[in-house]
Length: 389
Image: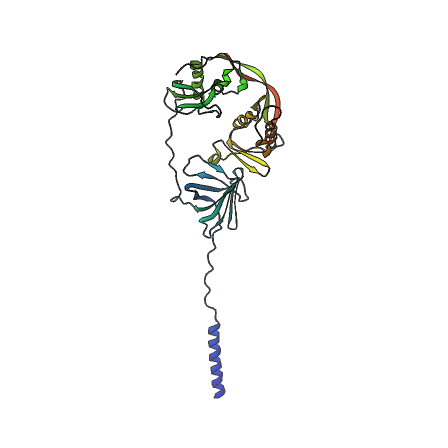
């Protein structure tokens, strides 16, 4: 009996032990977290002193690439049309980096665990500012009030200036300024030569003849179109042509003459300019920043003709003409020694800027070909000082 009772107790103990040792039911594995991404629109307020600016970064996948790379741009929410394309946008683990190299802009931050915010630092030049970005939803996306569109002048209109005031400029040291599509038209510190150049969309070398005061005397002009609507650029030039005839008594004729030119062509072995993203770079902007011993200029959203017009400011004896055959808008980066750009402005053989710009443009994939080509010139047969207001 004692042995039998012991066996029963042992059996009971082992049974209990086995019951205790049994594993509880396993909980289902946690659901896998979605892969983190920064694709979307991230918005935040950038505060500088007492001023706050609302900004938004739009990040998208590169549809024409299979490597998962990203691209995007920055927009200023309260300034329609103001923004810039990003050079790169990357996410590594939770580290976010947004760059716009041509402006010296860097944004570094950490993506939150839920993928809905970025704790970042905005760096540009010597400035470093805290920036919190939040992933926008259709409900929270900031929207700006677009300014009411001004009606355009009728395309078939033949406008003139109804009233025009021309006064001698009091401070001649300032640069020339004008807006062909303004109402009213305003031009500051312009000579009669400048008005002729504006009227015919030509360079000074294409104006032949005229008295010495053509370049020397400067004026401030304010004029109101006689036709409703915002004039096009060509309608603005037309009104200026009429102005110099009516108020300066300009008598002129046009003809073609051969000029030494520098034809801008594409280097068959060089890179091609990058087409601009019109969402961020469609406004013909130019940026510049210092990079070590160089100055880097970024032309964003420009036509080749706009680039040519910029280049012509550095060449006094030759006309730059576009023979690239490129249409559309492009992003073009030019790099040159800072010592050249920061040196005192000179003219003549001692000016190093033309050579520096030629080298920079050719490094960007272009090529200059020197040749003679016929250009339109305006020959001034007669001109008087402006009649009184």
